Image (cartoon, rainbow, N blue to C red; front, side):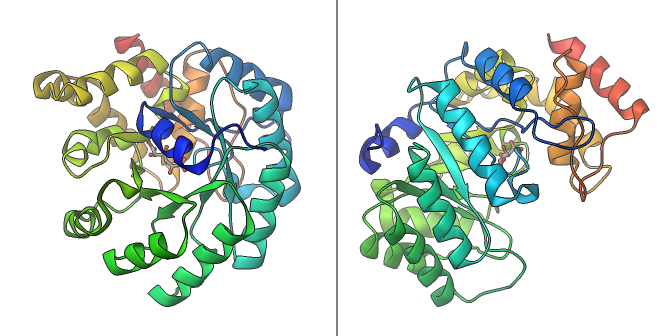
Length: 304
Ligand SMILES: O=C([O-])C(=O)C[C@H](O)[C@@H](O)C(=O)[O-]
């Protein structure tokens, strides 16, 4: 039995910042469970509302189903009920259904349903895909609307009618009209999660569109700064948010934007910069260069 009913999970996720930990690898790119657990133990000293194991920042897209299961089980065990743990469901429908079932068996509290791999799809196909995963588990499901799986307001309305356990909408697009339409259609029936790369960049305006929380990747390496940023957003302290955007976020984006995929690689680099290395990223991602790491380290040192 999960510790949170889907509705309890939705309320919990809305209540604070969300942690998306990286997945630690050894130098030969194997899952480094010991270091991963140490990381989760360090982060557990900071108050967040939920932990998403093997998400995008956790390189879930580079892990086998078996590895995802190991990562999720390690997270569930390490977190030990202090927070809800969400597991990913990835790929095509059969794969995502199997992963959702495995996540429930592993003791996860919810599912983050990623866009299906490679193929494009129409809205009706996405509705069937998402509904199949919701039907396969009693866990609350958060759908990640991004890339080849961007939902419109009519689809979201149909999905919530069909699936009581669909409890969250994570946005990775930032289309204001679409988000306004979705909130107008289903309102607080869903928990809304800002999920654009470096979510802090968009947090203040998206708060007005119903996104009371977001997935903070930088929480991995500057957890207190990420929490302070979130507090400024909730307080709608525009001056403080823009000070932080100027002092850290914008120069950070300048490094991140030098290479596709760096939105994830730069998080592992950030951990190296603060003396908590998480190992390399797996291909197809690339690690930051030594000089980029030095630049990032100097930037992080200014805010620590
Ligand atoms: O699955 C993921 O890791 C994400 O999509 C979210 C990231 O945490 C993103 O919001 C960010 O980079 O802040």
